[in-house]
Each structure stands twice: as C-alpha cells, then as structure tokens.
Length: 109
Length: 95
Image 1 (cartoon, each protein chain N blue to C red):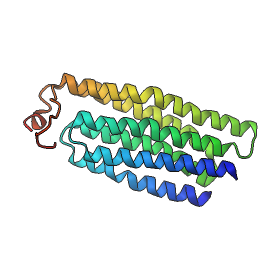
Image 2: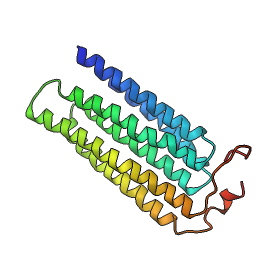
Image 3: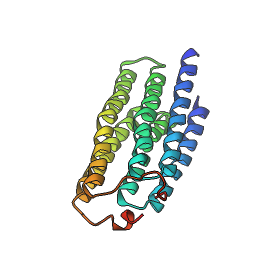
Image 4: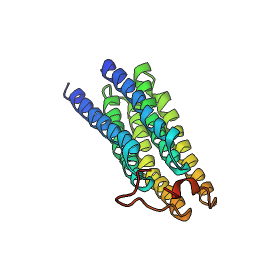
C-alpha cells in the first residue's frame, strides 16, 4: 500500500517534468535555449518514471522480477550517459554550422 | 494500479503531440532533431508502461532498452552528418 503511494508520486512527478519539457520545446525562442527543456525531459522525466517502474516491479519478489528491475535501472544508466552526449553533439553541430544565438529584442524563431 | 498506468500512458501519448508540432514548424533541421529526440525518450517510458498493462514487463523491457540505444545512435549520427553541411541554415540566420 505504501509502495503504491510512492510509485504514484514518482510517476506524477515524472509526468510533470515531461509536460514542462514538451511545452518548453514548443515555446522557447531559439535553438540553443530549446535544448534546455529537452535535456530536463530526457534525464529527470525518464529518471523518475524508471525508478517508479523498477519499484513497482518488485511487488512480488522473485529472481526474475529482480532481473527485470535491474534491466530497467540499466536503461536509466544508459539514458543518463547518452542524453548529455546527444545534447552536446547537437550543440556542436549548431555552433559549427554558424547558427547565431538569439538575443533580446530579436524576433522569436 | 492498472487504471493509473493506462491514463498515464494516454497522457504520455497526448504529450507526444507537442514536440511533433515543433518537428513540423521548426525553422532548422536541428530543431526537428530535438523534437525527434524528445519523442524517442518518451517512447521508452511508454513502452515499459505498455509492458505493465499487458503483464509482460520482462519482454517489453528489452524492447525499451533497444529503442533507447537506437534513438541515441540516430540522433548522434544525424548531428555528425548535418554539421558538415555549411549553408544549410541560411533560411534560419536571416531571422
């Protein structure tokens, strides 16, 4: 019972961050600032949801369930390595292509 | 608990529409790539939710792991490819 409440709270926090990231990708003024909500969505939204799923999976404890939970945590470890790398790759592509950052007073792109 | 997972999955599927709008209207290729990356990282969460709904998490977790790797490699390869194309962003740099 107490585990269900923890899982629900973590899932709701994850949905909050996913909503903020999606709206931020839509609303921010230029390409470099749009990477900030994208990074939040990648790391924090996925982190809380995957921890909630790994906890919920351990309800009926067995060796198989433990293995599945470890795999879910492995997805989180992989995402937390891969997401900053992908973000850095996209920023690098934008800088090398000569994309100028947005400054105050310019039109929103 | 199944109902909570079902409605979370439906809400997550609705949230995928917002980066899709950015993919359609994004002024540069890199904006579209951010949208694709966001949709892919939401799909990983949605796949595990579908696994809980079907009571087959042990199968769906492997699919989600493979999908996370595929998403990462696709974004990295696309950003390495597009940085060599100078002048691709002329439409964006004139404001």
